[in-house]
Image 1: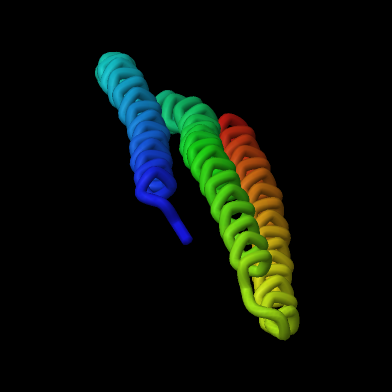
Image 2: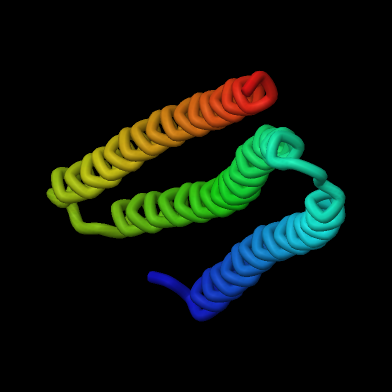
Length: 183
């Protein structure tokens, strides 16, 4: 049987985990806000410079050349921004997942200890029921590990896709810029 101290210890651990996960989530949000503030400040400065440069243009060819010179850096910045957002969210997700996995492992260990304790005090003939519970916990562990592996593979595929999209966007912008300068 669970004692009052065990229940309180479990509740305390759950509250600490909750606040730890909330702290991790806030850290991720803070990083996103900081990134967005940097992007907004840089965009404002660049817009000011672009407007000044556009006002000094003397003909249409110079305007097209100026436009082309802004295209490639803009595409590269969008790609870099997307990558930063992805990195922040992936890191935050990894920290939350790690904490959840630890909590789950602790809970499973405590549950198995409870089953063992109950089995020691159980009447004769209940060995099959204890084995069934242990088997169910093992099956749940295996299912959880399979889901984790599938999620990691999906994250790896998403990461590869983001890398490919970033590379493609930057190359397309470079080609467009090159064509614009030749035109």
